[in-house]
Image (cartoon, rainbow, N blue to C red; front, side, top):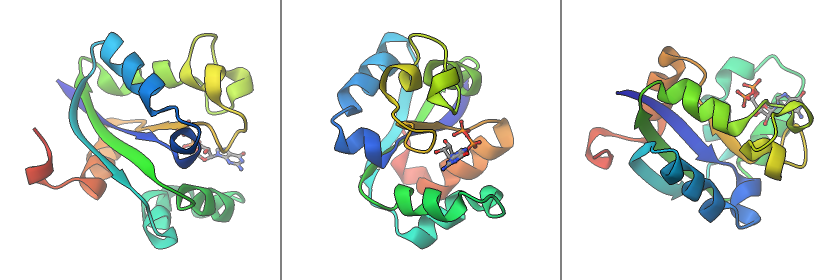
Amino acid sequence: MEQTLAIVKPDGVARGLIGQVLARIEEKKLTIKAMKLIHMTQAQAEGFYAVHKERPFFGSLTDFMSSGPALVMILAGDHAIAHWREMMGATNYKEAAEGTIRSDYATDIEKNVVHGSDAPETAAFETGYFFNAFERV
Ligand code: GDP
């Protein structure tokens, strides 16, 4: 069983989309192994997105990610990383496939409702960034 880190980003939480996202996760049979609501500091968001620190949008992205509560989760399942990214849709909601979360709900390339790890190494880093062993079932 593969694991991945999923986030309902601050825009998704503020817009009342947690229920919609969780319903899709349960419908598609991904298993929730850990879950909590957090409000990141900017420094915590910078640590999470360190891989993007040279990108022009890094400041804006970390402002946004620390702007309010976010729901962080560990999801498990066969090919959970690819499965969850397929459910999210492309980074740019305008290019996201029909029926994906970003296509249905995102309003902006940055405020795109959800996050998902993109590879096994990033999933290991990202799940460990938010959860210790006692917070996982
Ligand atoms: P993801 O794996 O699909 O989330 O995409 P990336 O890892 O490429 O980017 C991380 C996050 O940065 C995205 O989910 C967006 O919130 C944000 N982002 C990506 N590209 C842009 C951009 O061109 N402009 C802005 N403002 N934000 C971006």
